[in-house]
Length: 192
Ligand SMILES: CC(C)(COP(=O)(O)OP(=O)(O)OC[C@H]1O[C@@H](n2cnc3c(N)ncnc32)[C@H](O)[C@@H]1OP(=O)(O)O)[C@@H](O)C(=O)NCCC(=O)NCCS
Image (tube, rainbow, N blue to C red; front, side, top):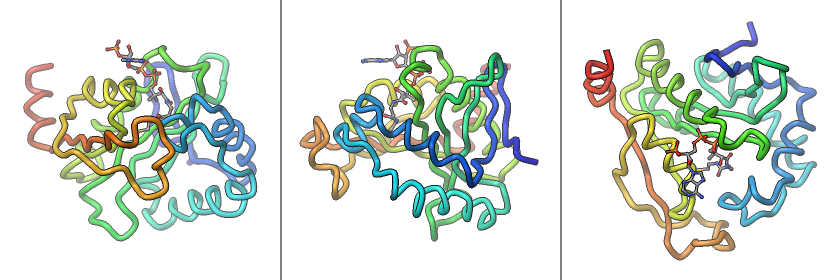
């Protein structure tokens, strides 16, 4: 079964071996890549030879529980980008990273918040996760707002990763956001 998760407006499914063009097109928008590479597109060869095969292998590594998943609008079926929920490569399965990268045409519609909230719920409900974390550059306010709106808070300031010195605001570093299972349960009790 390819479908990983659905919300009211968005479906997440596994990437497939012939999806390279979706990823290449997504990463070719300088605005999408602004806080990731300083606007540089990802080389198509890298997507085809390394990135996409790596995403497919990861589904098996984590038995389908975690990974990077393609996001589609339910109405009309347009590809809108991707979301990830995944442990670090050799890290504990109870600590997972939330991430997202959406096509510019889909920004501002609330999709990132809607799906991130559903992923956090899934992590704590179905996947025995203890903490969901995310990292973002200090200037990337849209990304920070998404994490804040799903109940995550800043736990650490981060140095800019190696290779990202060309990104605007690199001198400001970034933030690590987290939500623990206990925090999520307390927030859920207030919502109910
Ligand atoms: C981060 C990203 C997924 C957010 O997508 P989105 O569709 O705009 O997200 P949402 O609509 O759910 O929410 C965005 C929030 O950021 C706010 N926002 C957007 N641009 C902003 C800006 N320049 N300054 C401050 N807040 C901003 C929005 O107002 C909204 O918050 P609100 O509901 O409180 O008003 C999207 O911008 C993206 O794909 N960026 C490129 C890739 C990227 O940077 N990924 C994250 C790497 S850490």
